[in-house]
Image 1 (cartoon, rainbow, N blue to C red):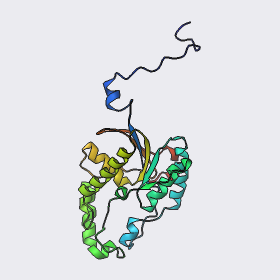
Image 2 (tube, helix red, strand yellow):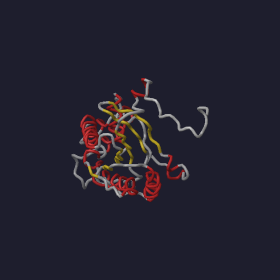
Image 3 (tube, one colour):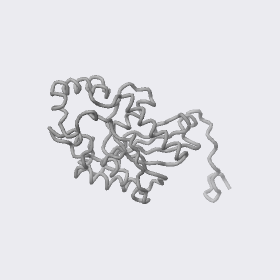
Length: 241
């Protein structure tokens, strides 16, 4: 009987010997995080208050995106789901864990960049700060891609610090498990940029309900998949960012 005979059981895979396999966490114990950007929100209209800018509801497109996201995760063996407390992220976490009946644990440190939090919540920012100040901040953000451009807001260092703290807590609580984390494009960028040594706070545009998969073991983080939204491939009108 030759080694190609289908009647002979195949030998177990050999232990990894490739240095890259080991370094990139292909084998062995690791924690898997599925970082999910929330579904599309209703974008605030001009003149909206600071509070409405921070936590808008989902759009009709966003509701449909969640249906596809839920189907995508049917085959994923999750151990837990976490979410930002902002409504668009919470709804997204609920969809990801729905097949297993997992309810998202809320972590306030996963929320989006805290823009204009020092301003009155019931007044539009252009009234509190003035149009010229807002336009100057926008121009600086376009140039530098740093959240520090915005006045009366969280700093870049504060944002990165709290997002990393949240992820560290999640990994410590779920070592070698698979976790869905529903949050925001800015939060995902903050985590990856800080771990990769990238200066810009926003270095890629995450699509709504896109999934970025990372492996973590000890102090090492490896990106396995970035900005994957293949669950929306059959409906191009749902691919939004």
